[in-house]
Image 1 (cartoon, rainbow, N blue to C red):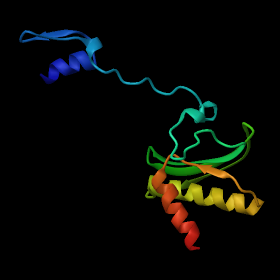
Image 2 (image 1 turned 135 degrees about the vertical axis):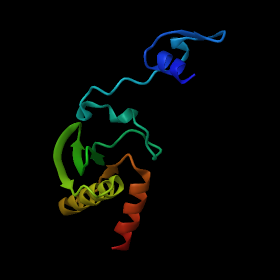
Image 3 (image 1 turned 180 degrees about the vertical axis):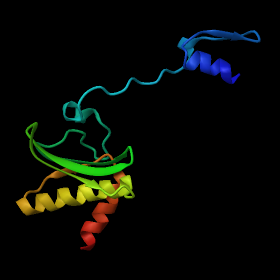
Image 4 (image 1 turned 135 degrees about the horizontal axis):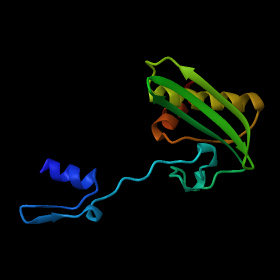
Length: 139
């Protein structure tokens, strides 16, 4: 049976087995990889935990990741659809993605405070935002 699934799913070929037909078009196909630069990605279509999915005129976008044994994080400031500032750093490989996301939110908050501005910080991690909020209120 496993060979049938491989033939249909990976090789994209129809197959018959013990009187049952397995048609390639009946199986869910994987989404194609994202082939656009993240800066050109329409963020308004992304999922948000706030009620208003449209970002304000000035917003800070944060992220952290772990790829190919390396961990890093960054934030960028967008004002009227123009990037006005960016920050990024590479972390030690043993740091987690969660730690990277927390650091990017912390650095974005520090940057906004140093400029004396009030803005929205956008992240794809609700848990990191919740933890950052606790951290920032405590200190």
